[in-house]
Image: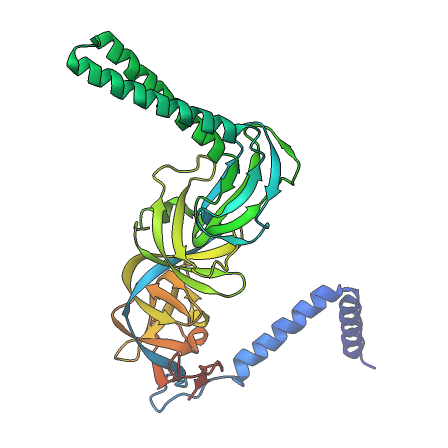
Length: 386
C-alpha cells in the first residue's frame, strides 16, 4: 500500500467518524437538502414546455352546478313565543257577609249570560224588600194627595216638598233593598266557562270573597314581547298567525302594541286577538306568534349554499354571463321551512349551488344547470374538473 492510499483511507475513516458523530436531526436535514438538489437538477417533476420554450400550465375548467334565481316580494316575519289569555275573565265576589245556600253551576261547565251560579241565604232580605216597597206605595199616595191639595190651595209648598222628599227616600230604600236581594244570587255576567267555584253549600262567605270565576275564551288573546328593533314594524290591526304546541294554526289580528317598553328587557308587549268559537283553546297555554314585518325584494335559497368571503362576510357565489365567479354579501330576511329568504342580490342571478367551495372569486367556470329549489333535491356532490 502506497503512502497515498494510506492517506485516502485515513480521510475516509475520519469522514465516517464525523458522520457517525452527527445528530440525527442534522443527518435528516442533509438528506433533504441532497434530494432537493437532485429534484432541481433532474427535472423529474418539471412541467412540459411548449415549442417556444415557455412553461405551459395545464388548463382545468371547474364545473359547478347553478340555478337561475329571481327575486320576489317577500314579507319578513318575526316568530316569538307568548301565552294565551282569555278575552274576559271575571272574579264574582260576595257583596256582603252571607251563607251559601246552593251551588248551582259545575266547575268547568259552559254557561250562558245571566245563568245562576251560586245562591246565598236571603236572611230577611226578601222581607226587607217587601217592607220598603209598601212604604214606597204609601209615599207615592201621600205625594199625590199633597200635590193635589197644593194646587187647590189647601197645602203649602213646604208640605208638598216634604211629601216629595219622603217619596225620594222610599225610592232609594227600595233600590237598596232590591240590590241586596239580587246580590243573593251570583249570575254569569257573560257567556263563558266556569273556571272556578271555591265555595260549597253551607259555607260562610265574608264580604269581598270570590264565589265564582267565569272566563270567556270564545275569543283569546296571545300576549308576547317583541324586540325593540321589530316593534316599530308591528302594525295595529295587521294580520298575524298563531300556532299552538299541538300543531293547530289560527289566523289573528294585532289588537294592541305597547308604546312603552319593559325596562329590564327592552321589549314591547304585543297582543293578537283570535276567534275560537268552540272555546277549545285553554288559557295559559304557550303559543308561537308569527308577526308580519316589512315587505322586501328577496331571493329564496337553500342555506347550504351560503359561504364566507376572505374577510368573513356572509354571502353566496354566482356566475356572471361570461362565466366568472362573483361573490355577493347578503342579509337573511327570514327563515322558513322552504328555505331562507335573502337580500343583497340583483333581481336575477345565476347562483352556484354545488361546487362553490372549490372556486375562487374571478375564476372562470363551466356552469351546469341543477334541479331548481322546490322541484326536487339539489345534487350535493363535489365540483368536477375537465
